[in-house]
Image: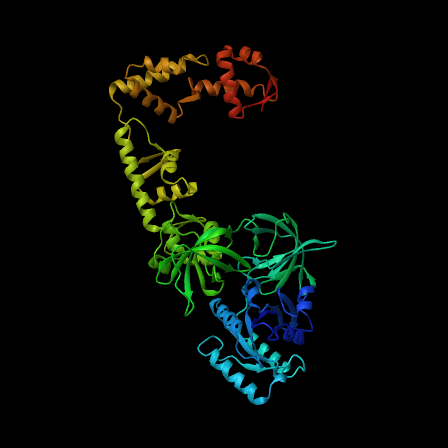
Length: 597
């Protein structure tokens, strides 16, 4: 089933609403004020089955210049536009502005509809058709059909339906395989149901019970029910006019917000764009305030021209935007449409250039990152699917879900090699550099697997437990150092569980304090000694004997006094040892007792 969104565009009182009513049987003017004044103020919605395979949703927009903001909230998601021109008035100011907006939004398909044909004679009708043809020349409507109709007599409606059906078959449908995005154009409360939001599902799909997020609120919502064209459904797909009954943080929901899958995207305030200025409009000045329209939202923004058709916009309030999103810009005063364009980057650096923006893509974004980027971060930054990101990453280094620039990765290998060389030179008695020390300095934002990949790429680097060393590095102890290290080990081994203080042993080992500390680290890293507190170190044999002693009491509960009796040590040693055993999960504290596990 092809789901098509058809939108109207044109001057006030040119018969847009009457035409939609004649086509669908649905009156899109639902407000009392609209019926009293005879003009559309808000967006109106209708639907029509064009064939068994094509369902059309209609978005009827107001034509009065005072309600252009409402028109912009509805026109962004349409696939095909009906450019409405009244036969008795021909082309008017809002005809031109609406048409400019459609072109700036990149709408690619449409039909020129001459309404009120019953009010003019055939010669005038032909003249209006000629004017319309000249008006759309050189645009996406240049080859579009021009159909004259009368909503009052229904003359020409069958021809128009046939033209819509023919055009529908050429329209590229919205992609349900992409990430879910629904710009909210209406929020209301239904008795017995609660809060309902409506909008055109511009991409992805939504299902009952799915968790959604409303941006920029970051509010989490649960889908209680879905309707498409008034019928309850289990899910809705891209291209459908959708009403969603939501539960959760609903109080602040309003038009202009964006619904997405929860936890996928984030709102932004600074964007770089490719901007098109309408002919005759004055160029944007630096820091000029403008009205920025995207999706169903309108935000005041500050324009900062970059050059060569690129403009940075700093939004007063955040919006959920993605590269590729279309937008319209209107002057701050007087409020008239002056241009529009497409979002290029939603997280630009402090300074950008036209050259950078022309080259931007996954490889450049990854290159500009500090330690590479995850696929999840790239999805949030680009709106691409994982498959698209993986396809764009063929020249990058990929470690699991993490992507890195190849030149940066190669340089990181060199930095690790240089760091190890420097470490060995300064501390020849240490077996190696702690991997977390290097990771914290160079790869704080990257997952641990990245350092593993760096080590694998460097054949001359060896990982031994938590230490890294050059393959060529070996410990060469001097004669006095060999004697000292033996003396340190013997001091702890002979002491059993009632060990002397660590500082006391080092002071009596026969070498200077700096080398003594290095020798102690060697014993720690070779697991001959075990540090259990800041000033208590035990020989591995003593710890093994303690574990064996407690194994004989497995399942028993004991107190500090009993532990002292079993080991023959004082409270000075008992408490730190018990805390160590708790950490090692040999024992488990239960109130003032412990259980041997």
